[in-house]
Image (cartoon, rainbow, N blue to C red):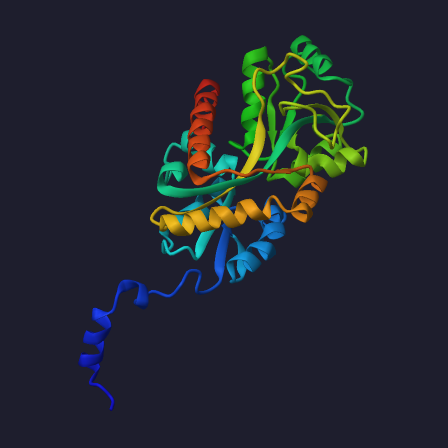
Length: 320
């Protein structure tokens, strides 16, 4: 016998919530990357197939570039907090933008849910091979002796590349103006072509040019030397920096995403970045895996936001 619609709805309302809710994930998971394709979204694409296997649903990488990541992050913030939309973003978007933009539309650390920092990549000082400095101390001495003569290629205002150089300039009193480019590949091409002699790059982005002899690597910003560049000293061992700087990339979700879903995503991500095949592929790109809990991730982001905010204010860096 078919029940009247009103009666059926009344019976449905009496069912326990668990019986009315489909298990998560019940459909594909969209992973928003707030940058253009061909950049750090590659890391997400390496991990996505294995995440899909562990979670039982496709994980689809969706590039949403614009405004240093703010457009994509706002889209994630407005998305339903049901675990079917997540984000994979870089340090700049998550922790630098809040200090950089006068009218910042959101605070990613406060307004989104931290899941895990999954990938890190040290920064590396690189120069055109024809440049007249073969070591980082030589670069510093030359720039100090010839102020305003030497310039560096800037991939994006407010990026970690930008802040690491500006912080270095402040501490060593260097007059070394930036030459802006529209992204990392154009900035790299500017250095290779000899338009600008100096650049701060991530090892993940620049390792191919270093291996091919198109860049000369002078120093890395990591705490210790990297397997990828064992003969290149660190800024710490040269006595030129007091802390390490690494580019990092993290997963986040809409703020109200259920804690159980956040925990399941964290477990899956940590499992993926520990698998030998994924580790090998990341290391081939000059990057490294990282595992963390959601609480550790949030605390780390807060500390990074505080540190980079101080650098932005000291350098009076601002983007409209």
